[in-house]
Image (cartoon, rainbow, N blue to C red; front, side, top):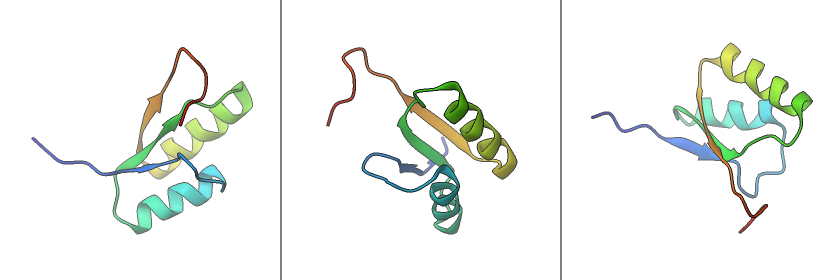
Length: 67
């Protein structure tokens, strides 16, 4: 088993690039948070994740955004 650390996007107001930069600087393996709400954001995130070689855990809810 390998422990992997993910930076959460909950409460994060910055760009995907800024989150990825923080993730890499902290030695984490990826990001975790709500799935992008539109195809433009989805494509942007996908490209950045691939270009930086990090993983993503998408949180999807059936009742909308929650805290």
